[in-house]
Length: 216
Image (cartoon, rainbow, N blue to C red):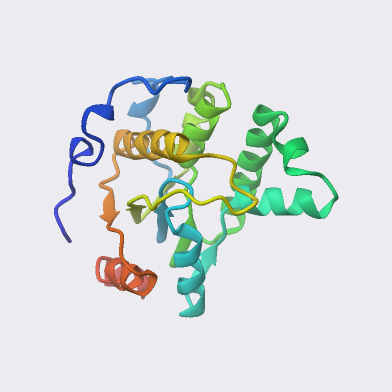
């Protein structure tokens, strides 16, 4: 496995500095002393919006791997199918964030821990989304110790593209990437950074770094 670059290598002076207009609540050090309850074979694919996560997850599914779609996108698509607009869905950001989080918990409770799976985001991603919605991430931090992921792959960002679902921009993408990296590191994960490559090469890059014993 390649040596993990430091957060400073990826974010430079942005690490540890305040992002304008974004909440910067840090994680409770006492809560971070918690121990994980269950070890899983789940491989997390994470990163900022518009980093290529969903494309990769679809490729893994096409290869026959078990995958779990991103709950946030699933939630918004479900609400749109009810006739709600994006504006209506996002009007109460805190309520939306809590509902997406509950959907995540539901998905995790149904996924066998011994099944090798690729996840479009992991539960700790929610810590950054809670901050962004103006809520304290420490309220859900204990849940992040329910399951220990086998590996966490962080995708380097691509230029931000709107697609009718996303509601951010490059500034918010940088905010999420920075906090997600810091949160996973705080939880004790050694992030595996995935460079910007064509999707098929990213898939190969990840598979080359997966512990083969996990797949069996």
